[in-house]
Length: 111
Length: 116
Image (cartoon, rainbow over all chains, first blue to last red; front, top):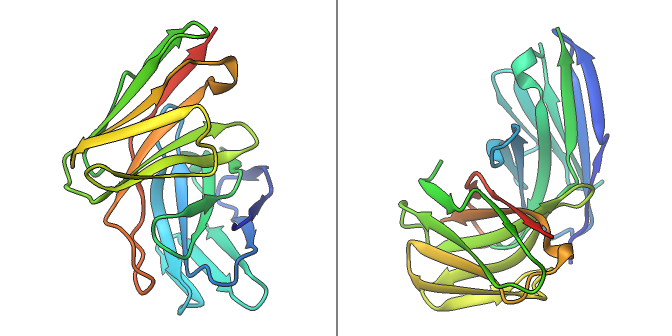
């Protein structure tokens, strides 16, 4: 099956700086890559996703890039704010009913 | 999100007792999933359902069973709880499969289960 690795496991940044979280996947047939944000005591919430026919996608301060050849994708958060502090998960899927998740990155934005 | 309600939100039970967790959705999504979340492991799929009475195993299905008698309800049962099943359990739903289009998962807020 698919194996998704996520780095770093923890990340601290100053407010206003950028944060980057990276994931690699093993199954070249994976074609859908969502990112989730999880706040304490809540379930993961989708923040952005990208499909394999696209190399980059942006939504305000959040962007995701995909390199299919190298089998890695990254989440970029610019102008970080304290409310960005949370655990972020990447995932990969090729069937739409089997999602494989990374182990999570705990992001702390220091005011 | 997607009107997913999990119950109970917290439960403490003893080793060897049966436990049932409930997931209820109001979005009429075809697919429903049970995941467990543990430190260092991310989210791992236990079982999923692709329709009423249609279920399949995930990567960590041992010790768990599921049932789906209605589109909106998906039950996860631990027949005889063990300490290794102490975890946070999340229900998720999505529209379903298709190699040309994948829809994102929508998650409930979880059930924290402690087996003593």
